[in-house]
Image (tube, rainbow over all chains, first blue to last red; front, side, top):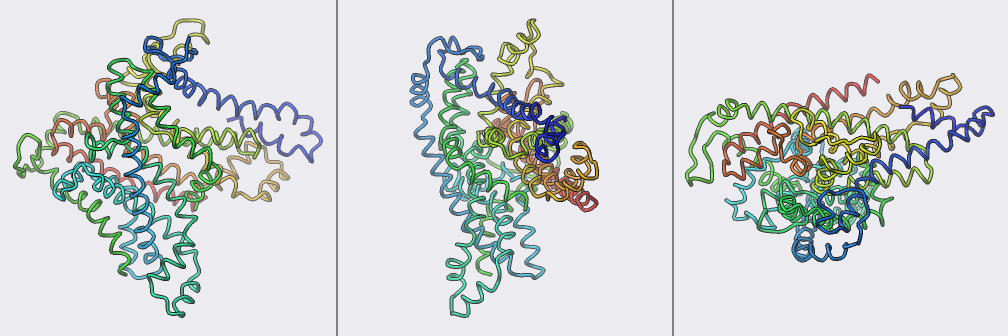
Length: 294
Length: 281
């Protein structure tokens, strides 16, 4: 924990003459430490993924940091693309994520608006119930039984329902906090003009919620896109999603020592989120932190 | 009031009802081997207790969660302090450290499974550094592998903790720090006496989410060890998944109930304790 001692003098150097002399070496230590930590903690694992994804099976038997003698990246990509059914899995992932996000945001903000505005005792009980799902784990085994009884077992609709039930709590929690900061006068003015509650919600409230809804969208996309545990129970073997597919590829790949294919798959499946993240990193980082600190 | 209805209908059907079912089916003999489901009393729990599975999995889950909470916050806070100033290098590093957060946990698990093989890359690096052959089976120890998987979990999420700590550090006013400096406070004192108490809300959030989130862990452990060696990393969720696959639905449900109750019992004191500490500070 010597980091703060390194940081401070460099930052304060402008006014203090003595600190100014110390500034030079200290000024290099901090960036060097930062880059070194990136290199060691992230560079090594990610480098191994990329070089192994470009090797032949024999070379990749023991994944290491050496460059492949000859790059087979495209070949390996082609193989997992066909064998791993990436297009179907990508489609499955999107087909589950998009409706989940749409439904959970709409129902969540609808409920949060009411929960934020009423102050009755019943209301606070309902709010506590609604946000309990943030910490409490879903009953994953009996969900399967329930879906079977509803005739939704193994269907996309069932999976969407499960995710919506799980993440409504998160949305309601974030949005209720946000609605409380919106002045009531805005709604009252619209109501005076004769707007019904549906109209007030759609034209006044919903547009104001955009910042908090974008935070929630990021979080829920991350959860749903990467989830494999609940998907294994609900749609495993029926619908392919990217993580489910990776699980299958890796389960057989580990057995056959096909590390090159596992890592080629990981590169391909990580690319969509990685590209979105690089394009919108500032927004994503701001969104994620703003939600948490409030 | 009608606006509450759709959300609560979904919550009821897909969240509360299954939870309620948990309390019922944990006490039956529901399995894939026969179609009838009969009441079976506490036999599932007696069975799980008798074989030691319940205590074993519960203990491992609690240990795992506690270690993840510590590691993730130590790493996150360390990185936040290291990358606090707004320089170009620091901004780049922050973005890099967020990459594991957006990656699939399953993929992270497979990456570390390869990295930590006895003849894998980490031992290769250590061999070069120490000039001798290192071949530690990182994922093969019945006592230490749980620590290794907790470290992997912390590695995946440390970028998120870092960002939340950075946001907390940003809220501290410059005047306070200037006053401390004029009073002759060393950077070390400034950090522990002033900054750390002021980021208490961030600590609360990070510790609570890391602790309760990793209670529900599955992906990383499944991808690295599958619960082994000798069940020494078998979290509750790994057990639930495995017995579900074997068709022993009632036992799986019983364990799911154990997880639910443990998290429910832990959640309230954890959050309250951290909040109280926040007030004192």
